Length: 321
Image (tube, rainbow, N blue to C red; front, side):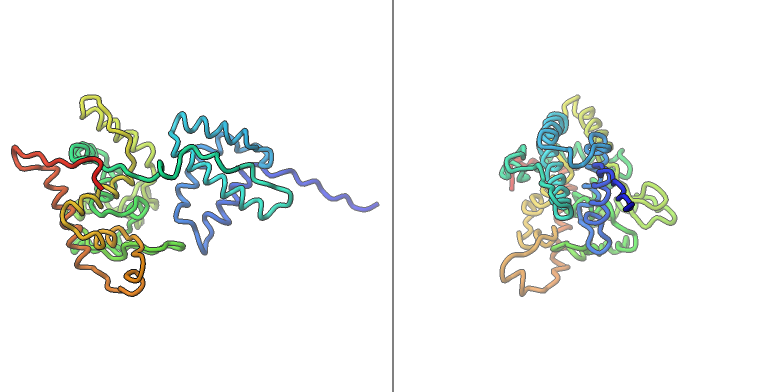
């Protein structure tokens, strides 16, 4: 009698997502820059809900119910982030499996692109409250301060290594990553930022500036952000700040540099944005001195905001560009 073909059980959501993370998101040759955040989404929101569900059984109504719950508890933006991750994974799976069609269709997003565009910057009063609360927030507080003073992305700051930064000169060489269009390259941090780095304890065997264990960098953003907001509200007479995220510090830094007289093309280079057009293609000058001066001006204005001259409180309109 012919040998029977063994029946292979259908893959669970966890099995497919593990494959997606290993083969696509954290691919050894070309890992995604957002790998940490994508894995966090699975751990926090998706695995607790669908870990053991048969992957192909998850339909449009299941996704809609999940988005409703996340939008209610964590906001529309988080719901859209999860939808984007699911959409990528289901499209990835469809390329590998016959007769599978993603249940995600247009119109399922909870926000419009114009609404998702970041506009929030922190006012002077808010900066004082955030900085003061950061003083007592340990490693997380040091990250908050460095994000503001360097104008760099959260992930770049979180994974800063001692070998890449000179605490005597302030020179920080920011590593490039696969699939990364551009970054600030080499920048010179101002003394105020260097003082923050020097306050961090080196952990033997751990290469990271913002270390939390023997070999890992800090990664507890959600929990520590909640604690920081609670401390801010307590110091502010029980009144919480309007919703803000760490990326708003980068936008705030850009706005402060403009306020301090930094040329827009220089602040764009500090942020590590791609310079468009002919200038971006042909101008290969590193602008190291100009970027260093821009960060000095940023730190100077931050210091003035934190400790304004007696009888003169520095203010900044929230809607400033």
